[in-house]
Image 1 (cartoon, one colour):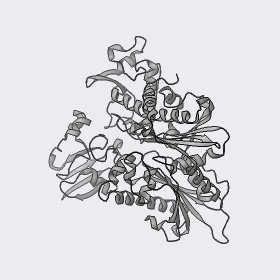
Image 2 (cartoon, rainbow, N blue to C red; image 1 turned 60 degrees about the vertical axis):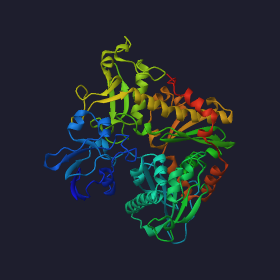
Image 3 (spheres, helix red, strand yellow; image 1 turned 180 degrees about the vertical axis):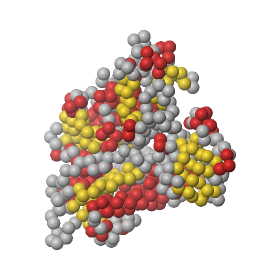
Image 4 (cartoon, one colour; image 1 turned 60 degrees about the horizontal axis):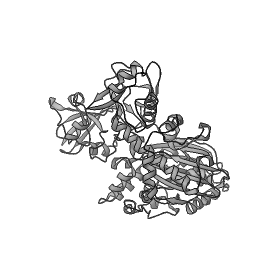
Length: 552
């Protein structure tokens, strides 16, 4: 056995020899950023290892690939690569911690249109829960008034099996993998239910019902449904209908009388969360045509009106979450969330106004849009070499186009010249040609999905009254820069609206209103679904949208 001291927190733990550090941290509830399920390919689970007695922690090939020489010299290592071979102090830098990721909590507080009637002498409560792959949000409501009494959120404990749904599916295919996903999700929900009840001073045994929405993988793992059919074309869910059972039957720590209702699934990776968004925006009751876009690793798009609706999922990949980006990170303290170029230089908005530690998805979009406007990235996505910077470029921009590892790069942040809060964690941050390519791949998937839905209905953008951006990512997005890179359509900005956590809003409506619950089931039942991976038109459309030819 070896002794590890974890900083921050000064947690002292006993660990078996040769245990993998990231597994040890997971077992003790310490969330570390990771996207590759411990494979050493994402390079995000950085920790500082100080061996007792002055020893040096071994350096792996993955460490050398993802960390600079000066970082290795300071004891930085990837947690997924280091096996515990000695007593040590493990310091988790802010860029690797996930406890304080920005999440959207209460969001829309609007009550239901048709609340439940009161039961004589009994005050009823319920919870609407959005099972996100990264974050789970639970709202506790008074079922008579529809009032939100408390909101609790937390990181999905399934994250230790990978950041995206594909990693979760791969884990489910392993021995005991599905059971482990279920246990992790149940633990997350039990914590959120307990915290929301405590905040509202409501006992768990006073709950009447839970309504659960989420993507296809989350709803499957919640109900212990096999995920193997989602690993291969045509990605057919094992379950699709709404289901009502006791919360205890799902493994939740609730009394037997508490019921649980799970949202219906449309098809493929278009899950209950998309149904919730469509319900929250009344897509099925509108005369004019609207589109909903939920941007993420697996983006979802819905288009329709009362005349009918069609949906698709877009395999965008994790670039919007900061994965596969050399200096990428989630939307946590220290993440650059917005970027602008001025005559004097680069302006960075950093979450919590602290030292820039990396860039999250919204900051990446802003930065590439600015580089396009400055003429140092062309429509193909090529970043110019230092000697090719346009003559009209200001001196500060010319100085920030450098060669790094034999290829051009843009210095997004330089601790030697840029103003910031000085800490030991400060390091230069670069955007590389590969980073720009990753963004192109991600934005093309979303844009192609939107275009194909329009084609399916024989429509153009002129026929779309509003585009709604759902989810936390959309809430922080700058529509103008998203249009510049071609992620969002060329509509007037007045016709693009943020709707926040609409999945939670839809779940709240289904919790308190039987009419809305039946509408949700009709939306799912009557939705047309396009499986883009099997659509021959998608690949050409996707290739067309790789170019940066968005609105200028």
